[in-house]
Length: 208
Image (cartoon, rainbow, N blue to C red; front, side, top):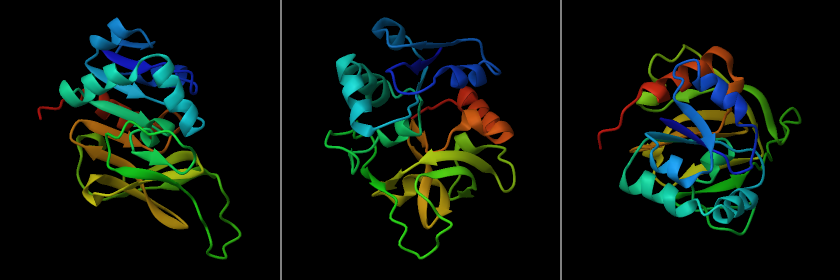
């Protein structure tokens, strides 16, 4: 069963609808008992970093998410804000993140004199594969995805970056550390490119 974590940060219905194209065994919930039985987790999110962590804490979800991810090592996918919450902290707020990824979330600083680049980074952009990952199988050539964000993740271990994107600076647009995956873009808004990525997540298995 795939569980999409409902912690009040963004439209989870569109992600569920995309997952349902590949499996009917998917639910949206914050119920602890259902989460305990999950085989995979998706942590979506739109909004502010501190609000996301505050909501996870208010719903007493942090301990169970740590257990499922770090001890059971089931596959987990963070999307947009959900990817940023995987890091240690964010320039956007004061709260600690989940600290599953050794890195930080930082704000775009586009001091390049190019007035065409605005913050937030919004719209379609291409990605560059940095290394192989089960999440990226059968990717289209010149894959592109839909982004909406003002902050991006920096990984201290660059080997955890699996996709990068250029927008004034080159930033990590997808990552993997063992069973932990993250994407900065919105696969649910990215048509055939997002469908393939979600299909890969639904089908992948992690064996340590």
